[in-house]
Amino acid sequence: MTMIRDIFKRNRERNDPTIPSKAAKDVPEGLMFKCPECKHIVLTKEMAKLQKVCPKCDHHCKMTAHERVESLMDKDSFESIDNHLKSGNPLGFPGYTEKIEADSNKTGLNEAVLTGVGKIDGQPLVAAVMDSHFRMGSMGSVVGEKITRAIELATDKGYPFVIFTASGGARMQEGVLSLMQMAKTSVALKRHSNEGLLFISVLTHPTTGGVSASFASVGDINIAEPKALIGFAGRRVIEQTVREKLPEDFQTAEFLLAHGQLDAVVHRHKMQKTLSSLIKLHTKGAVARG
Amino acid sequence: MAKKVQKSLPFEEPLIQLRKKIIELKEYTENAEVDLSAEITSLETRLEKLEIDIYEDMKPWDRVQVARHPNRPTTLDYLPHVFDDFIELHGDRLYGDDEAIVGGIASFQGQPVTVIGHQRGKDTKENVRRNFGMPHPEGYRKALRLMKQAEKFRRPIICLIDTKGAYPGKAAEERGQSEAIARNLVEMAGLEVPVISIVIGEGGSGGALALGVGNHILMLENSTFSVISPEGAASILWKDSALAQTAAEAMKITAPDLLEMGIIERMIPEIRGGAHHDPLKQAALLSEAIEKSLGELNPLDAEALIDQRYNKFKAIGVFTE
Image (tube, rainbow over all chains, first blue to last red; front, side, top):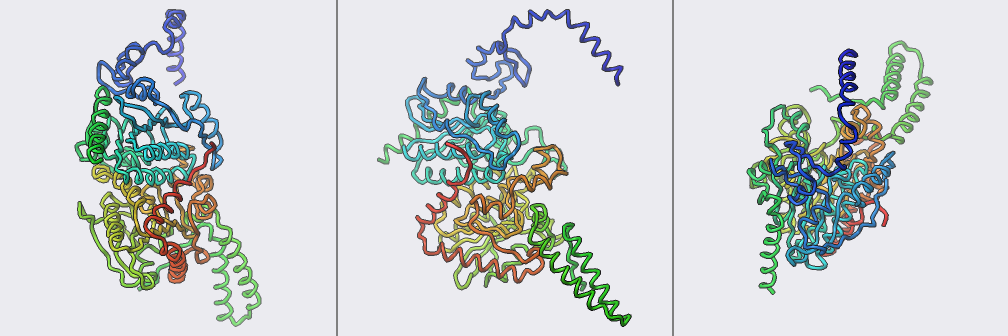
């Protein structure tokens, strides 16, 4: 064992001088983007223009909440709300507050969802965009509260509500309080729905667990990005319980579409247009009804 | 037929030992004609004290054990003792009948109600049929159908929660487990009749919550309600499911915990040592709690009920502005 390690160690030492350390530094961090799927390398700037869709394999790479807002909303139309809410540490989990803080600094968000009012093609809407870079997009008290307040704002203003989900599910560190956020967001959605207002859920990679089993699945219209992982239980858990091999495309957006769980799978480049049309079609109906 | 042996739990071990000793002494007194009644009385006093010590100070993990006890009364065990004229109604009208959830109409102290509950099996055969009380989407859709029916006929709804969780399986995913649960949450929010959700055993995550959006949530003293099982939490948080005992404490999943957090309206006291020690008496305590909640909710009209539910759930969460 140690011998093998020594071999590699020697190699590394021998190779080190041949890689000019200066050259490596010549490429500033973040200039290039590597597709996690096909390893294709693109200029980050180019990738941003492509809305983080790989030009080679069409993989929809993860977006931050801010990137998502920029790619969809009319320029400078988006105003975020509730950025002042801060998670507590209700169960007193060691290190939880620090983890939240670290992710907050990393993402520039106060929690795993960005909410606010904006416009798509001049049409106002309230949007909530989850960000899987923040605690895997998991839902605790603040995520639940921000989404609930966003829905309430949409209800008050008579606006459509659009959510982009990206979440591993409920946040363990807040225990049953996290679970109850599923109910909290649901009671708010019911009120919004009773007003005859439109709710579009856009499921992006990944949307699982408690988020999948609450607001993500009950849009008037449910759409998903290609190949997004969407499901209630984790694949490994299911494989352990059913002891059978699951199909390759199990719990992908395409799998859900085939099983009648989605209205459509929409390419990211067509998302803005699709949302715009959907909102327009619903607004006209509302106007005609008076 | 042999009487079912009461299964004891690890934390009850000192009690079992002491009881055994008392029985031995009693037998000895009878057979050997030696009077040991003084010793017996002293041991019985000790037993009583020990019972109080052990049962009055149950740790979260002890409660988890009691909540999972194989002899713990299930929905169908309580039904005949709490309600009259129960008629079971089957099927979701879409796919099938999921026996992990039972439901139907009954009368509670003369008032027609709809009762819906998770149903575990009593033995292996029944557990296979009922999938260990872990529902598929059709179970939740049956529950929703019965709730809508209750709403039409202005009957209060009583849900009994007792599940490890919604079933994590291939078929469940294909038929929309997520949507079935999510739909129940939203639709329950809008029900125009009183909804009382009572956790009688394990309240496992979304699969439990799908019957849990009630005006009142009540919990039996030794039941649990959690986002994940203690074993699951331990394996995710510390990569070691053996730490379940620690997780049970840390996750705050017991009835006293949820009462303190303001998530549940009240805790229903249990027979000392757990409901399985006397299901009949426990049923009476359950009836009492339902009567109290119904008494508070019956006078409310549809709008007030929906508002009450809205405000209840809207208030749950810990954060700073």
